Length: 182
Image 1: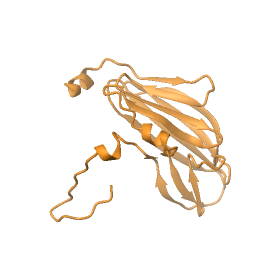
Image 2: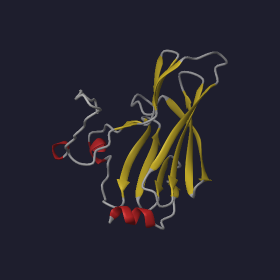
Image 3: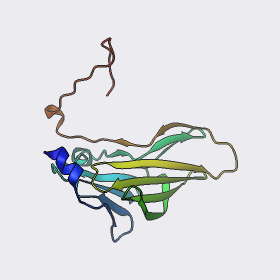
Image 4: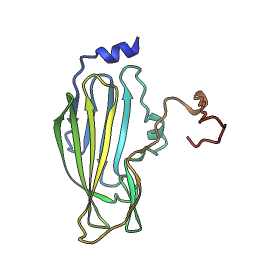
């Protein structure tokens, strides 16, 4: 029973940094996610795997060279993306790994926008024995002026559990049938 394995998993959370200092792997024996900062492309998720089933949810996106944006937003009328493929809209400032409660690890990645005085921190948390990775972002305005912020997206990945021809989606919302955009 897979759910029993998850609830009884003794696996401890780990975050490993690659030798180049710009790639990190978060894992706990159930799930594993590799994020990478490439100066020419920005921040991307290179892989996101279920270690229980062996499925890499990013495999198709990587083959299509379309991993998606780790985050995006509009500030002062300009669009900013964690990965933009146009020389990278952010400079990497540094990282930190800390313990978090209940029993896990958190990775903090710090960036600075090239086009506007903004700093972005991206946080990834992984917990012992849980098949999830939590994520949130923090945006700091260092311009000294008000900067309108809109269209905030903190995760836009092209995850796929299988080939499109092998997937089936059934959805229904409320009492009335209605078109859903999923």
